[in-house]
Amino acid sequence: MLIIRSRSYAEKKLLYGKWYHDFKDIGLRTDQYNDRYRLNQSAKQRPITEFIDRAHSLCRREQGPINGVEMFCADGFYSNYPAGKDSTEMYGVDIDNDSLTKARLITKLLGHSDRITFENCDVFKLSGEYDFGICAGGLYHMENPQHLLKLLTTKIRSALVIQTVYSLANTSNDYSETPAPHFTWGCRFSYSYLQRMVKDAGWKVIDKSTNEVLGNVRLEDRGSAYLLCVPMKRCKTR
Image (cartoon, helix red, strand yellow):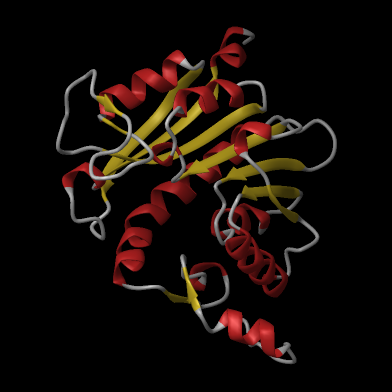
């Protein structure tokens, strides 16, 4: 675990404040907002990081480092996880400047600033191409998640890791609702609809799992799905 010395007052105030993730498993303990965040990270972290490891192994490295992108990166937890691997560069995007400030600070403290860049960016305006992508937690915040999934087939060369909430209250094959129940924004869908949406967007799911995020009380918000995907166009060229 890192020992923090010689940091500015502003950095220490931020570091010892409240965080979305606890970074202890990758080198530095941070205090989370409340037990809801702790419970949800406990459910999500292992399946996401296992799929990130596998996505990384699927990348075809020809020259230079493997590069990845994390959409909806928040405080940069999942950007920092693969950055610990040799020859890996990450690009994290979000539209919340406070979260990005935290992401840059924790990345600096973990010694990954030379390998990770964070930017305030709309995911629909994502530039460049990447070997792999991480889309954890963003799809259910959107009204048009399939549009993003289709766009990512032009941005991600080898593998995409998806994590999203899905509804345990409505398990119909064709269930999709916008806005999400009890909200004025976002969407909810069943697990079956999610898989079909991903396939229709141009992705092949090569592995998947589910569990429950126990910090979310309502059944509409409690299912958590994990998908490891490769572009169908890649499968056709094999």
